[in-house]
Amino acid sequence: IDLGIKGCTIDNLAIVALDENMRALTARELARQRVDMIILTVWYYRTQTDPIPAIALPIVKKAQQLRQRKIRIVLISDDVQYERARVVGKIRGDDPDYWRRVQRSEIQLYANPDVDAVFAISKDDQNRFIEMQKLSSEHSAKPPVHVLPYVARIDSGTTKGGWDVHLGTFSTRANIVFVGGATVSNRGAVKWLIRAALPALAALPDAQGGCAASRNVRFLFVGAAVWAEEAKKACTEARKQRKAALVELLCDPKLISSNSASKFGKWDARGVLALGRVDDVSAVLRGARIFVAPATVASGISTKVWLALEHGLPIATTWDGTRGLSAAVRNELAALSLPPFIL
Image (tube, rainbow, N blue to C red; front, side, top):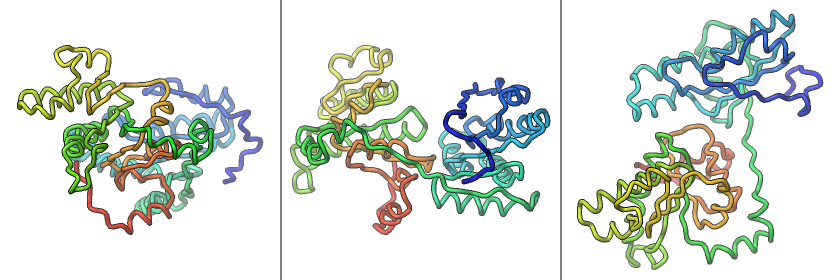
């Protein structure tokens, strides 16, 4: 996609990380650095302030005046932001009108004539952004909307001996793995996996599709210390209710009466292993049997699902967990008429 910038190569691409108040982003600094293009992510995550592009656009315009030349502006959005705000807002207890403010702001950004291009992660989002542009009557000229597909690379350690060797390793694998940070949607997913999915699998009889392997399944949680806390809460409730089978499944005998889980983010029970944050996620995935991603919020690209694909893992996910996959794959899944997933 030609944005009219000459000599734009990887050698003169600068990536700058800013603090949440964006104090480092000034018109004078942009001019001093001779910035020709600025890429801004559209992300509404703080209810009391505007998104990064809304804050940055006036600064970029001032920098253009200092440089006396056009600075190209590109927006990248991984989601229909107001829909995310509406779903997450209900969970967090945000102001009921917050998502409507996000919607108005989002429409203004995508239709802003100072923006040179808008990038979406899928054809679906591209069409949604174009429809949102039509809702703006302020500007006749609107920036083009393109699809910037997510690209993954197969993990070299997974395919080191070839795919046949990789497939042969599954006979020695056992864990069902979940990877994710402590977001609102992930908290709900982990709670469901520990309190509903795990006990159901552990109790599933042969007549209903169960087997010895499913009844001895273990869920492995990686990415946040709070997963150990969630396991500890479930264990505590099982003990209070005197449910011996659940206690044996959920409780770490070494930490059951201590605060170690909250301190170190670890939990080691027969059915639950929580490791907190790890340095090498690939090493964990290379030993997993199944990857689970019960997403219930259509929030950006489901990068965790891509991560599982990169490591050749079978994936159990939801419709929202397929965001970012190709339209052909999503169309095949949509044709299956799967029942809705409810945490």
